[in-house]
Image (tube, rainbow, N blue to C red):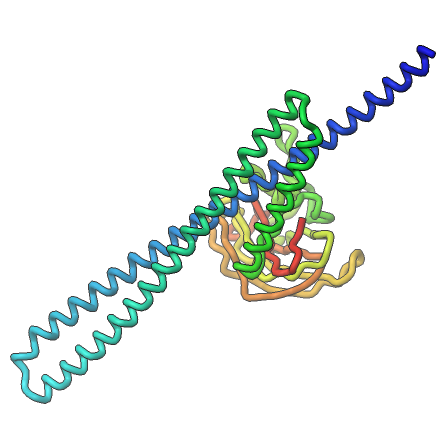
Length: 325
């Protein structure tokens, strides 16, 4: 009799342990969603700064046109009829330019207002997600409300999907969430330092403190590649890279290739880029192409110093209806 109760108790404990593991996984998913919302907020704020710079430039241009118009008006009484007619035409042209600048300034202002509203809405949603994540974490620590936790996680995931769908509809696509498991092949042997392996997966881990670095290719090898299986076909229209910023190992040129079949692959060039800036670790975005595939190969064809590339991050932009992991 006692043995049977003990077995039931052990089974119940195993079930509870499994439920806790599942809750941990869902908590991690919620935190990842919160981080993604923060990244979108940062991008929106960067776009807001760009629009503000455009407005400032347009205002300066408008001031220059006003000065030209005043200078022309001062000359008018001193000129003959023919010259006066010419100056009147210049005034008319200057006024037209001024009206165009005014219209562009108004449009930029409207875009700035819209973007500000988007930032406010995104901030509010991010704060809600962050608050919920903290609340759920405390609840889990106290060992309470597992059922409520699961329901809340599902609700948050649904809201995140709706937010992603709206963002995709507005932008015409979305940056795929990077996944180190996409890497299935790459050039050479990675560098290892203090127990850290700097393999190709480091270019997709979201950590700007790590990077891809191979150690067994010579100078001007010019064929450093990473093969990706992104799990499902995606239509890509942009690619972004972050180099190390030391110039010597910074990417100067690359190709993005696709294959419609898995290994053995059949690679076809989708886009070639030869104007990647060196001496900076800032993100550089390249577009002007479109390709659909599950299998992709990123090939560095040249670095500024001829040595192996130090690739900090690689990002892919998709316009597929349901983008990425």
